[in-house]
Length: 208
Image (cartoon, rainbow, N blue to C red; front, top):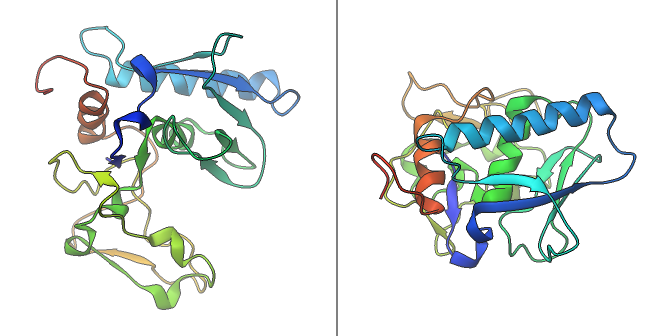
């Protein structure tokens, strides 16, 4: 699971995320994969078939929306009140369901799991192996985020893998639990799901 942006304004109103595709950036096949990832994320966090968050095409009435575009890397602005243009970029190699859902969790207001203020209790960042100039990718946030009292989640879709941004092929991020696996990009973890439900104030079993 990721860690939520603290200001309530980071949440999209009523959990609805309007989006537009940048014209000409994706063919019909890629658009189908991206929209399919939206549907899977929505259903993953739905409670009793009631949607908790929803991605839908923007209309002229939507003042806040996200632009989905091609570009360098796989990135997204974080939350509704992101400072600047709200974009979700899916470059070469990014149009895969798990990667898209990862970026959509950022869009919904969540930072990486290893950005949590207590992360040093669970992982070690090996800065000597990190590409120069990319150290900021391992920033730890304190006052601006809310863990919502959830435990650290090695299995989060928003957790980096062991060799992210490595300069030399050696690990950059090592779990302190030797049995832990990090960096999966297949499904939202059980805690990812609960956190989205709590952050967006959805109601249902085990959600408060």
